[in-house]
Image (cartoon, rainbow, N blue to C red; front, side):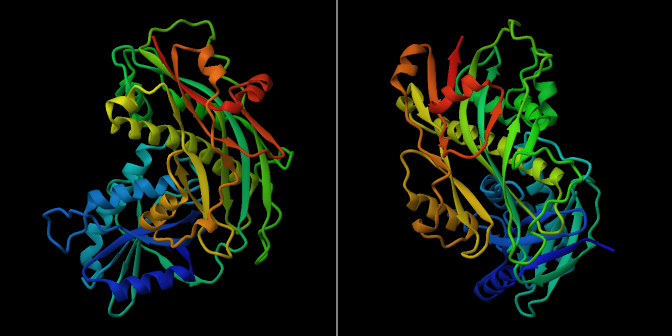
Length: 443
């Protein structure tokens, strides 16, 4: 028997609207959460229209555009939400679209996974969904592909709509303090070098640095965080401990977590390594994950929260570097930069599940609502946005003066919470890290 997909009723309505409005094939993404027993689909979003479509046939989906959309959407998903697959609305026979859907599924997963700083675990689901919707009959044709197997063939799957799929999902969140240094290669400098260090996929990092001291940057910190201790409401729970709450309809549980990380003792603090510079990230971020209501366990909460912490730090650094790589010369030589802060928006007015976006200091909330509409097709108002979790960073002149050889890039400071996470830092460093800066050191 194939995988079973439990789908929010709102997704059925969304796909129906795409059938009514479609003038040619419509592609999009399916978003939700996987579990070992079943998948939960909480939203769908169509691929945005491209201003200058390629010269390819009008009836052929633009694979490059679909995958880039998936990459941008993946950055806007907190822990527990991910791109589960793709859909296509077309009157072409379902079996004739399988090859196209297969190509889209594998291309999307390849691009999204290239930005991850963590690897899939043995208990992670490897199946991605490909859904065909006939706009005339409204019939759905659901198949899955094993993304771990390049030769995977389509397998049938069950697609069922249900009301309130995520209404009783639990959430876990924490405020995480970060203090890490990303060394840059000694044979390249500047923003391009930083971009390379952040973007080299995990499977290529060993070869990329094979002739240099190991400089895996953010991935080193990600491994330390993965091995850290996670406390839920102040307690260390057994991995197989079933979380209370969220098991009855309309009953939600919100956990406050604390992530405790010990630096890798195998790395000597006195080691001298030749490098072309360093990118230092120091500050605090708000991390959040959502848990399905099908008897979630402590192990799942810890895994999803840690992955979100890693992803949100890497995303912000990457977004800033992308901005600088396209900026003019004056902006590139600026001494101080602010990392974007995280803003949340509910998927539905009554549901607990939120998506997120990142707000730069020179942007307004209207730009966030515009991106939510473009990327996720969410009609959000500025009043719907939750901007309370992180406050804008402020440049501290005395810190900048104390370190004149460094360029400072500030990260946002989360609001005060019951627990403070510690990552690669001490209590003293944590208290002093309110300015939340990213430094670029020139050697």
